[in-house]
Length: 116
Image (cartoon, rainbow, N blue to C red):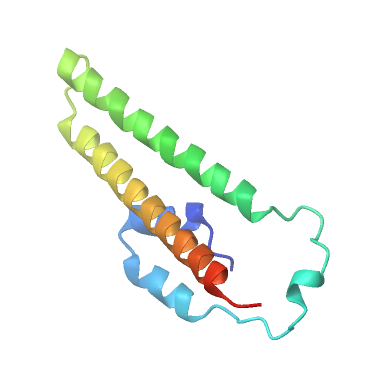
C-alpha cells in the first residue's frame, strides 16, 4: 500500500492519524544500492510530478474553503459547520504541505553538505 498525499489526506479527513503513523512504520526500505540506476517503470510518476499534483490539490482545497467563506459572508450559505470543516481541511492540508516542503529542503541541504 503506497502512501500518497491523497491517502494521507484521506486518513486526516477521517481523523485516523494512527493509521498514518502505522503506515510510516511499515514502509519497506530498499536494499538495492543501485536503486537510482534503474529505469522508471511505465506509469510511474516522478517526484516533481507528485509534488506538482500535491500543490495543485492543496490549492484546490484552499479555493474551496475560500469560496465557502465568501458564500457564508454573502448569506448564500447558512451551513457554518460545512464551512468550518472546509477551512480546517484547507489548514491541515497546507500545514502538511509545508512540512513536506521543509523536509525536502532539509534533505537538499543535507545532500549539498555531503563531501564527494
